[in-house]
Length: 459
Picture 1 (cartoon, one colour):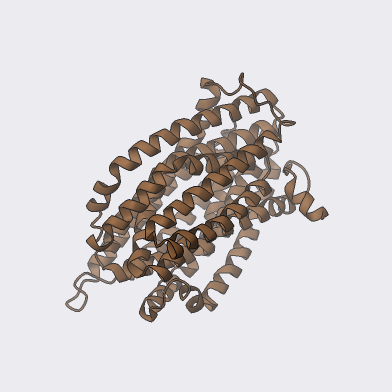
Picture 2 (cartoon, one colour):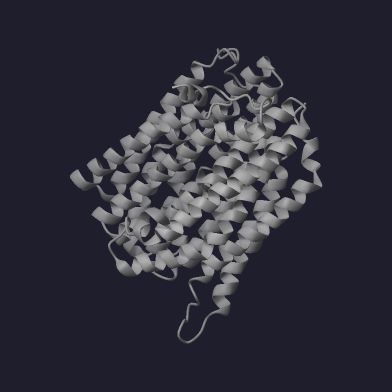
């Protein structure tokens, strides 16, 4: 019970042994990310098992477009997490209160934008990406429902960023677990019982996300011993809103660039037909689990660096960065090993088609080494962002995704064209991804040790 109580309390990262504080903060967030990934994975399993491989391909094909249009939420969430953690570490209650109030305003603005823009561009974008006719209507239905229900997604993502900045990663986990369990039941209810297909999966996701958002908002209201939240703070304040936007825009752009790269590669993937599209969906779902330690530790390092930079303790930041990165590499290695060992069983959850399972297992093996490299990249990028330097990780991401991943994908596929493989070797799409991860990690290490990020704290 004491352990659970400690996990639920906000974590002050400015005192104590760095790796212990980082781990204490990361554990609930890692569980939460696993739950979030399970959330998406169940959608794919349900449509794959109860509707078919083409429905599985449709849900996966829509993914990069959803990710592209929610980059606003990602940016605001990161900006909120950084500003909140720095003001909390500096014990600046007034600034913290204004920041949280302006987060709520930005949530509402971004939600309206996504609902309108997403609905308008969905079908034209799918057509431009050479989406096969057999799955075009399913993709369109799925995306329309997701964008019409964008409020839940925006509130959950941004408010969970605020909670993480306050050192509370446990609350968002609990609410996400509840929503994920609900999502599973709704998936089965809409798809198996009402035969709603892909649209049913989207509707289940929207409802579950809205519920998790309500819980996050309630939790925020219970933490007012740390800040004030009333009408005088929930109004537009240019200074604090721009702090969030300035620090969040690079992360939002990073997400947008990553999503654009995924869309460009998805267009290449679509040329290999529905079976390879479906295999790609399976790999990306399993890949999500392999990436979870990297993402979780990276986010933890952002909060850790933010609080300690706010407190002016850069030696502690450096010490924690080293310890956190080692932890992330160890956990990632263990999870990657389990995925490789139980690969066929995992892939078999999504489909009964043996050829599809074999393709997916082969592709995930190509990526294995890259996961460990990404543990380093995510942790060091998290430190730089937490210190206020969100631009450097953004430029690295642009270089890694557009300058390396996309270019190499098209180049490698083109160079492997033969009479036997007139479209090229489809495996090269994954070889290019692994190369991009390794190169991006080397560049990130260079800029981290260069040390310019230490001059970027909020004043």
